[in-house]
Image 1 (tube, rainbow, N blue to C red):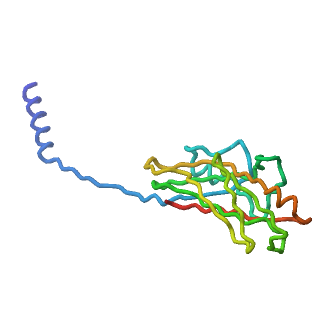
Image 2: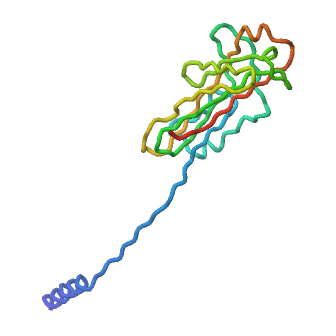
Image 3: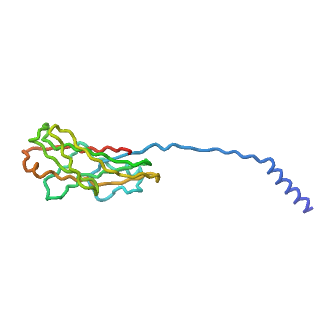
Length: 188
């Protein structure tokens, strides 16, 4: 009796194997490009790191363009921190940010007699003198934020600091001077 049951079990398993079929499918998804820069108030805490998430980037409070940061004359080679440049990207190509700066002018004017130029420093890079022309056109420079990789997303925070040109500050007429610094995220 035991032999009969064993033989039936073996035959049943053999038949199942003979009549077995398989089905397969693939799944796919498309991850959209995320390439973001955001200026925030200067801080040395709560900074993005290379492994920060998009949610952490999105949670940052952007510095309003209508809320200028006040700078003044400082000692030689002393820069005034003005903001943080935060970035997040999932691009596999290298990317940079180009920044442009326009001289500070007395509100409503754009003549060389009412202009104060300044130097901009982003992160640990060498300071970049962004001296505008009398016509008010912006000078520009760029900084690489990430090299080529396929490792997924990357984030970071770089401090931005400014130093006014002492001679311009000393020669400036009384008034409120305003200048613009603009950052543009670019894939290389």
